[in-house]
Length: 167
Length: 371
Image (cartoon, rainbow over the protein chains, first blue to last red):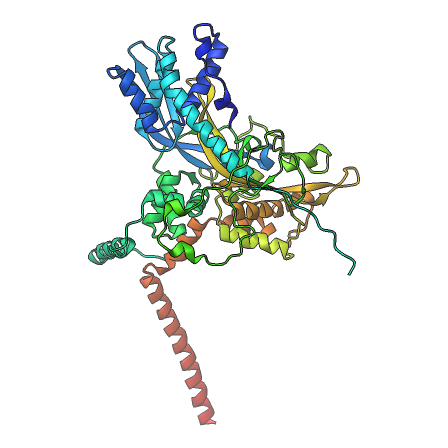
């Protein structure tokens, strides 16, 4: 699993984080939110924050990101091809701004991710976001990753080279 | 030349309605869903994404359905769709070393750090039709895949990095992230093209065309003695730098296939000989495509290694100008559109030429008869 998702959650440190930590943890949070499904975001948002006042600073928008690769894997960059991306920016009554951006074409999902990002930045809301939104997504991703790794491991192969006989 | 014609509106509308009916087929057969195409014709989806140059499984699956399974038509649809969307930017370059690997094989080393995993592959199957698949499937009847505890003790370093550690392979061109990266979707292709543009062109190029060219290099038309150093397939993270945030944000993961081809050596009086490289990368599980791309990438580097360009695969202008199946199908298929005026002109010219020959022949007959 990628390095960004692998970062531990910021819950334990809430309130004591310096700016560097906060932006690292927010990066990790955004990475998790980008992988959330409709249910994983919609259900907790509706349950805990049913009457949230949300202003759309940037209405959900579908667009393209040109995905780059590197020659030989680690050399100079080249343009591989594009991917669809949806992004949204919201502002809560508190003035906190949330960014949502993810692969695919789902405006509702991007907006919900932005809302969750804005809520997460509020130290008072963060534990709930962590517990009911981020933790379940993280757990699902970990399960899927473990399953993939286990299935892949079962196809590990040992090749033997055979010496050709002398007639 | 194609000349615009008028009329035929009703026939066209009826033909499209007929197409829609034929697309649906026998209504006694359940309609195929986008999810079914995505899940069960996954490799067709991968091909449409790679050659459509747009990574979006659901969109590619929809295009396949709309195109009745005609993959080049589906690729065309995807390419047309992308022109309707704004571009948000460029991703950070993918880090294929950090891939969650689902398949990784090497034809150069039997034993290597992290080992070889076959993953879901057609390799070593007997290519016998499996009539059991024709029976009405019971999802529960498919046995779950075997599992084993993964060995995480060793990272799956790139095979080419292992060779590079001994300085036995050429270095990749160094990342110069301040340098602009060529983009075919923004600027027309010019020659000679940089390797960045060539790789972008090959990545979206037609698999059949690149397969044939790659094959031709093996048969002697630009031979470069390739070994599959490594093929790996799996998930990599896509990150986008967001200005407002001031850092790169993860957008999720995509599946890619990477082929590192290791080719015969090149050196000089002052440079020790080293293996040379060909590189292939594509969306989804597209192994044949990635291998073909790597072969052609290496063939097109002929000038770098002072190789004489003898085979079609080494001819940059030929390869890059004919690799795109959307362009190719557009020009080939336009031949079936009305060319009536053009053809009438040709007929008139042909008649005139024939009349001239006939006049010449009859003149000679009269002269002979007079003698």
